[in-house]
Amino acid sequence: MAIIVVGGSGRGVGKTALVCGLIAALSEYRWTAVKITSHAHGHSEAIWEEGRAGQGSDTARYLAAGAEGALLMTARPEELGQTVRRLLQPRQENKPPPHMIFESNRILEHLRPDLCLAVEGGPEAEQKPSFSLVKDHADATVARAGRDGMAAGERPLFQLAALECISPEMRGWIRGRLSP
Image 1 (cartoon, one colour):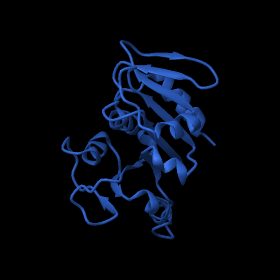
Image 2 (cartoon, rainbow, N blue to C red):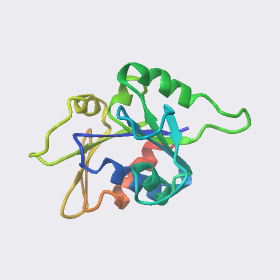
Image 3 (tube, rainbow, N blue to C red):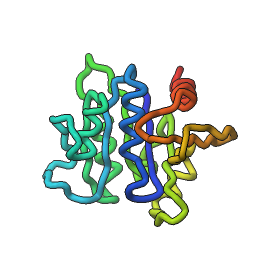
Image 4 (tube, rainbow, N blue to C red):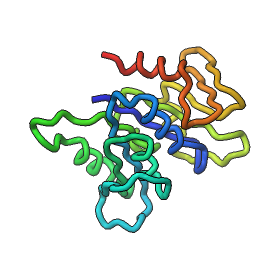
């Protein structure tokens, strides 16, 4: 099971767009995508499964991008670890666990993913305090730019013209990181 975490510096930086781009670009992984929030979204369950693809919510966007499953996890900080452990328990003995993409900063307190991507907003954007955790664990940084590009280094910087359209360089890099 491959696990990717996409965290971001703040609201509106493109975390959901990047998750959707990863789902579409790496469809062979048959992803289950999970949005983690501490805010109630009208569902009483801690883990709620989206049933319809579309553009009306982040989880519906995941399904529209090609995810096999899309979940909304609502948990207060003190409940998050237990809720994550419950989610990752095998559901059926005959079925292997799915590959998962989490959209969250806080999950890194409870889980070490195979790959962590940090989505940076512009210099004027307000930065979430939880983003420091993402920066500490990030394998690469992703930012919007006028055109696709990659700055190599210990921690590559992928510049994407559209976060929902993963560049060939980024796709190859990720596949190399997730290969056994």
